[in-house]
Each structure stands twice: as C-alpha cells, then as structure tokens.
Picture 1 (cartoon, helix red, strand yellow):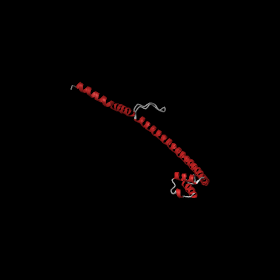
Picture 2 (cartoon, helix red, strand yellow; picture 1 turned 180 degrees about the vertical axis):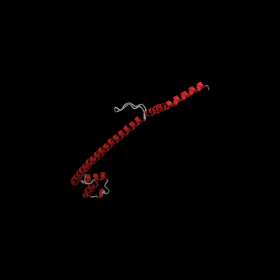
Picture 3 (cartoon, one colour; picture 1 turned 45 degrees about the horizontal axis):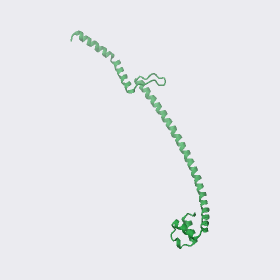
Picture 4 (cartoon, one colour; picture 1 turned 90 degrees about the horizontal axis):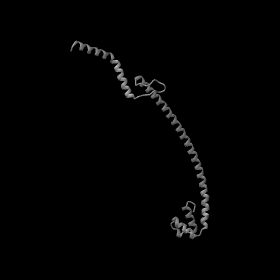
Length: 160
C-alpha cells in the first residue's frame, strides 16, 4: 500500500472511532424504537422516542394504570359482596315468610281433611268403592263404609 492510501485509511479509521459513540447510540435508539413500537404523545409529556428513559417512563405509567385497575377491581368486588349479603338477607326473609305460610297451609289442610272426611261420609258405599278402586285400596270389597272412608282419607292425605 502506498503511503497516501495508508494515510487515507488511517484518517477514515480515526473518524470512525470518533463517531463510534454516536453511531452506537443511534443504533441502540433504533433497536429500542423497533422493540417499543412507534409511540405517540401522552398526557402532555414529550413524545416518546424509544430512549431508555422514555421506556422507563412508560413502564412507570403502565404500573400506575395497573394499580388503578386493581383498586377499581377491589371496589367492584366489595360492591358485589355487599349485594350478595343483601340478596342473602332478602332470601332469608322470603324463606321465613314461606315457612309461616306453610304453617298456615298445614292448619288449613287439617280443616279441609275434616271437611273431606265429612264429604266422604255423605257418599254411598258404591261411590266409595269406586273411589277406592281408583285409589288402589286393597281389600276394599270386604270393607265397611266407615272403613272405606278411613282408607280413602288415609290414602289421600286427608283429602278426597
């Protein structure tokens, strides 16, 4: 190589070494932009340009948003627990009312059974035999009218 060529190569090498930090910074920024994607302005901050500082800022913002979302979820869960407790209380009140109504119905059933027994007494033995046949009462043909009334009352839970 001639001295002029060596000198030109040495000059280029010095210039390359001198520009190396700037070239490395440009390369890193370019890679970070590619990894981080194209970002736009947010909340009046400077445009995010893919630098490490900008990416850290975005990470902090993402963490803040995640904390806010967690707080909202906790609030929603608390509201849901309150609604479930109110629903449980309402269900218990309705169950209590139903139990009270069932007690009244049981009392009414006894009254109806007495009336039904009387109604069975009003029927003829032939009618009672037909009812006993429909109800599947065994030994009905050998029973007296009173026995048929008792059997039918017992079979029908006190109602005809």
